Length: 101
Length: 153
Image (cartoon, rainbow over all chains, first blue to last red; front, side, top):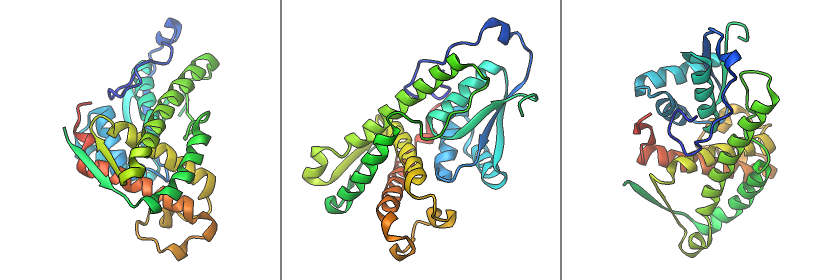
């Protein structure tokens, strides 16, 4: 489940086939929080998404200045994996579709 | 393997550990940040929560383990690439809990200021604030000296 290779390897239960049949685009959104230092957020984004430092910093600043940043979009399963990994690092993150946004 | 040894003042850190242990107790059954889930599926969400909680507890235990009898013998903690991820996450979870439990009344600009004079903080929350700042400094040292962001995604 972890997108960043951290030690918790078990994953939340796989989504049932009926749900995976949807062709929705899921977005991974990171929200601002008052605790984690900027360099920590940049490190987490680099680790979880494999971003270059400059791109991770750009997303971090977007989160800091606007309250949120969309980090990734794609399948539900991968979005869940990313959100789970971000929550392991105690970032406030969610997976959204156009319906749930 | 990179390794950092930090020499601390035992008498200054000991009271902070009391606060940190209280926050750790709070976190035993609770996530530092409430999880959000893709859908309203209680079984899925429970599994998700329990797995996050297991990881959080493991990370907090790793952090508290730095301050065992060896620490009280010489005041030194050792951080390397084997424990740095757990320690970073443990510090984050504990800082969030300390903020939630004790520091809600402190303005954000003071929380982010690394050089806040003690008199700017009310007496009753100076201990939690010092613990919050101490854990921030541990994170800062790890980020600056062990460069965990350089690892492969």
